[in-house]
Length: 270
Image: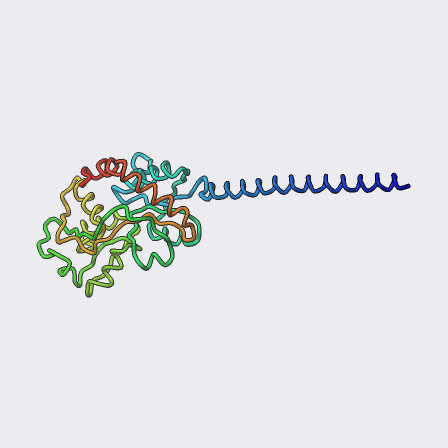
């Protein structure tokens, strides 16, 4: 009977020991698994693909050419995506629909010559600035009355719907009426046909339109007003994406890619 009891006790002890060993192995395996998942989580904070929204009528930043969306912004965001390691799907919409689309999560990223403003910062995030701009005035080529911003008081000024230039007209030019258009070519045409006295919009676009126009209908006057930076807009709450875009943009500046794209679309990297 004593031997039988001893065998039972040994069997129980061996069984308990085996349970502890298996538990320890299981714990070690699970710990390793948890760490691996955590590590994977850290490495995969970025999505594989993001929806980028842009405009299609802001030359030379983004516009349609032979049925394809091209421009400085389009080349830049593709280069940023390649550098950051994610794919992008580009959609287009009217400029005034871009910020609301980011707010509702319809789009993840926007690049469309979007000026960095404090009001917009309340509802979207921005990358570091990628382009310096400002507002320029375009008037009919034979107009000698408008020489600067002060001469626009009480005038009808063509601009783009939802743009910083539209806000500038309302806030800074006394008695002026902002004649807003969804498409920029409509704004320039309104000056050419006499519906507006002048156009006030982003300097690169005004300059490009006048330089590439087959008709010498418009000219630029005055100085560069309300200097502003363009930024890549990002839906709020995604700091990893903001950081990835900023790091990619910095790399493109350092390795000369940014200058190559600038020269391609503007002729000089100065």
